[in-house]
Image (tube, rainbow, N blue to C red; front, top):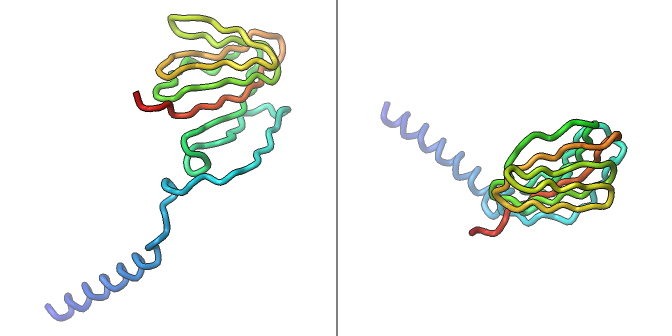
Length: 141
């Protein structure tokens, strides 16, 4: 009985070592350097489009293309440890900083929102508001 258990354990150990040797030298996705890429934007789309989803696609950057109908908002949220940039392609809107400024924007404008800032983006125009947001982790404080 002990000999059978020893053989079973030895077999499992051999399989584990074989699997380990196959993965030896391969870097996990979180350690790989992102590759350059071209991303085509659908500026006429009616839906949200994720552009970058963070690692391993980028080091820390996340981004998405947003289309907001008139009167709609993305909802209050905080940048937390990220800084955010909004690049407006079409329409008219506002970034409303909780307890602070309201930043009006139109086509061609770029808005910056620092880390740890609660805000909302609202479409204040009569047509769709289309913008690209880009967030990246800020330097440690």
